[in-house]
Image (cartoon, rainbow, N blue to C red; front, side):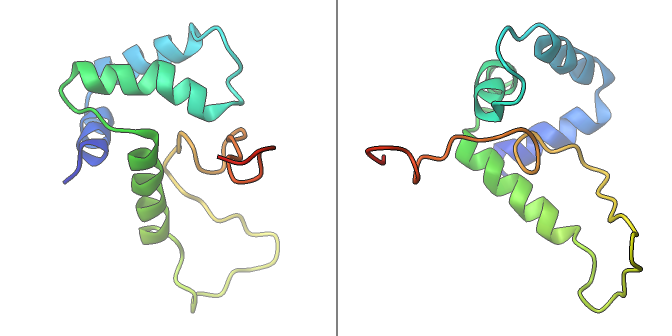
Length: 108
């Protein structure tokens, strides 16, 4: 189990940790739409303090694995207009916008 997975397992069962993260996010002075910055300033420092450091790349990999694991079976029919529910509130995936390093002028 990697640190991101360990952190979110702890986050799921620790109400005080969830409150701490939500408070830090509420006090974040920048745009909540730029998710990498929010993660770097809010989530990563708290995880590091708990001895569970991880990176943006680690978080994106964890969220991608989780989302794919919880995706509906391709053989299950979905009715028109039916929403696909995912009980997880991702920090990066499908939320706000992210830096587009590949498309940036001068590329990185």
